[in-house]
Image (tube, rainbow, N blue to C red):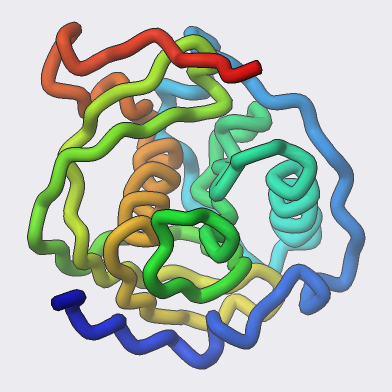
Length: 190
């Protein structure tokens, strides 16, 4: 029997990139070993116009990247704590909040660890087995308004949130894998 879906934060569930007062542009994605990927991002003012533009750019870049379910600011070369997530189209998703961007996100609580395979646009040649919480509570701020929100996520959305928060803390999934045996060449399907 599947666990009950976590409640959707109403404010986050209703948010979309159309709430941003600017259009996003697609940015190039930085790959390892770029130093920005191993640097702890600075906290931001989510109402700063430059951060609002970055939020729109992250969503635009995620949208044109096949299979991408999240993108963090360090992946486009900016060492700040901003990321976007949208797992709504992924087959492993059980519940989700749709598309959202969080600034200054922090994990408040986590439980029920599970190991699963992860990939990343910034590590294009490898995937890795990473143990992460399957139940998660995260706080953060929405761009433009700066409203404080709390997200209770589970399963695949919880994994995506942890992956993006790690980026903002200067960590890649490679840093979370149990060792070389847990890193695998990425398979390509023709």
